Image (cartoon, rainbow, N blue to C red; front, top):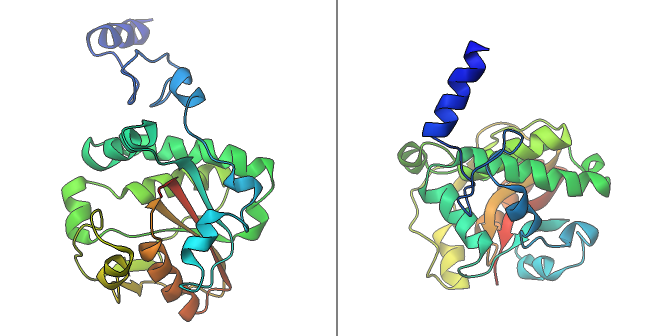
Length: 228
């Protein structure tokens, strides 16, 4: 009883709130309230993982198979707010919850059988130190929890690159050229490569090519959000 009283006291003084809308959370809610979860701009890429507009973005750049994204990116919309929370507001648990939420959809169509390991796109050590975590890794942890697959950091980012935000497609490709190297053997496994957002696909393709060149059997891609 004493512990419950203390918990209720702290919840009153320091209430947990939804990372998106600011509503007070119930005990059974994690980072997002049920209302915000219900209104997320979810995609249907898991229903057509090998034939969609994301595949067209990377065609001819990397020999990957399925490409999917949990959310559709919209400027000033929920997906942009989520990415902002992950990058600038110290919300690693939000990444984990998003991964778990997407795993429910992936399990519905039985896609787990296609992968042996989940690999996050790495941050440069300096950037990871500044942020305190890698948002893509947190998303990968959530997917790992929900899909019951191991997560491994098979890649390293050896160069500190400039932000990709305002770069053209060609500039993005040049910016990540020879940035990633293999940290651990792929062991011929089928890899699910995970990042926070896909725009031109330059970063993901650069990582995928390193994995494929070092023996990965297949590489598929998943992101939190997909932009135009």
